[in-house]
Length: 271
Ligand code: BTN
Image (cartoon, rainbow, N blue to C red):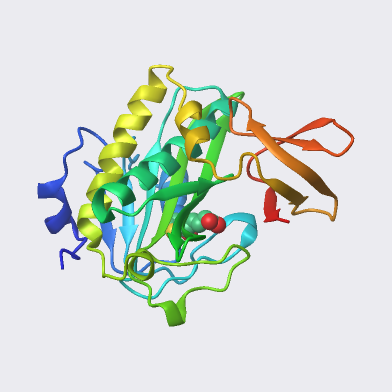
């Protein structure tokens, strides 16, 4: 199993130009997103764009909407990536899109299993014909006025979590091992993720929107959904018709009105 994710194992095999060239492995940590954020905000040295921080175990892994992100030691890919895009704030939504696309493509490349995306940032694979969540993304961004100062994209991919210890979640979870029936080597998957993420970011930085490719992979579109905010009990029920250019979901309710729901503050339930 090519499972060693240390600097010594990963750096010689990296095919990227800048993403992950500043690569840091720690066997155990609270949260890679939190540590990278603290490093950028308060560190004496300034981590360069493309810095990747990866761990084999998180004691305080964070999911979206203040949830925990749990994974047994060495069972997953848990990493955070630093970007410093010279983009307007709302374009930060593209990072979620291109990271989701990169991970879905890498899963397909390495495992041969079809991968999809569930709005706003879940990576999905099928188990017995039913879509399950195999990964998620967490975006932490800092603004400078109306522009992005930096953005940290955290990725958690359930690679070899045995079925018995899969986390209980709103969206049924699985791992790539459970979905494919075989253990999956983590290092080739990491290398494929970073390579595709670098290509996707460079295209976005040239102004090419990831939205069309993202829409193509979004299983949410066309579905009858209930969208509820985290803060209160207001729920919106309707058909998820489309996304806007920054990743918001456009939901048409029974009255015929089209509502725009910003990514990041909702949970989605299929009716
Ligand atoms: C979600 O689906 O709720 C997002 C999960 C994101 C988890 C990853 S694991 C690496 C990084 N560090 C964290 O604390 N969270 C993200």
